[in-house]
Image (cartoon, rainbow, N blue to C red; front, side, top):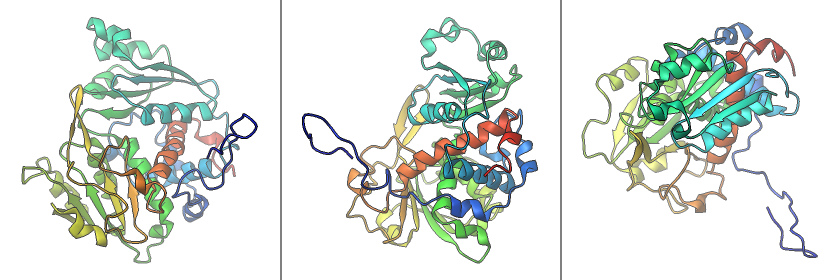
Length: 356
C-alpha cells in the first residue's frame, strides 16, 4: 500500500499480504511425492489441449510450480540460453505477461510479437510458413490467436514446442491448470483421499468459453474431489454444451448439474468460478451478464471466488478486501505454473528436480 506523502515523498510499505488467498504452497508441495519421469514426457511436446494431460502429470507440474513459488529466488537460470517466441495476435495482458515473466524468472530471453499488423501475416503469410521461420529463431512458442485452428496449422511445420495460450472459443489449457493449481493450494487435503469433497459453481457457457471448456476437462481428471459441479448460465438456449461434451465429462465421473439461478445455489458452493467473456472471431461476446458477485451476495463464509480476469461488472471490487478473493492469488500462481510447464517443455527439468 502507499502511505500519504511525508516530507514531499511517497513512501511504500506492505502491512498485509499482496493478495488474499496467499496460502503458502509448501502445504501442497509436501503432499505430492516427486516423480520426475512424469515431467520428462513433456519434453518437446506441443501443448494444445487440456485433454493431453493425465492426473499424475498435472500433479507433478503442480509440485514443481509449488517448489518455484515456495522459493522463487532459488531458481533463476534453468532456461539460460533458451529463447521464447511470445506471439500474441489477440489482445492479452495477464496471459502474455505471465508467460514472459515466467520465462524471464528462469533466466531465458524473449522475442515478443503483440500486433499481427507488424508481421508477414498481415501480407497474407500462412501460419504454417510462420512456424517454419520460428524454427530458426527460438526454442519454444507461445501463441494466442482468435482462429481456433491456428495452433494446429502452426504445428504442421514447427520443430520446436508450442503452447496454446488461447485459440478462439476452443481452449486455454494453461489457464485451466492455473485455476486447478489454485484450488489445490487452497485445500491441499483434497489430495489425501480421505473423502474430502467440494462443490463448485462455474458461471459460464462451456460451449463458447475456452476457459470453462479446458477447466472442465481438468476437473474430469479428479472427479472424486468434486461432490458436484454446477454450471450456472443465462443462455437463451437450453443446451449449453457442444454435442457429446457433457456425456464425455460425465463418463469420466464428474457429477454435472445445470442451474439458471445463481442465488439459489450460491449458499451451497465452496468455490465460485465466474467469467463473462468468450472470444469469438476477432472480438468477444459476453455471457451470464445478469450474474453478479458483490459483498452482499449470499456466499458461504469460507467460500472462495476464482476469475480468470480481466473482469467486468460481474465481479465487484468490494470483494477484493475479503477472504473470498482468491482471484489475485490465482493470477499470481499462473506465473509459477507456467514456469513449471516451460521448464519441462524445453528439456531443462533435470536442473530443478531434487533441488529444494
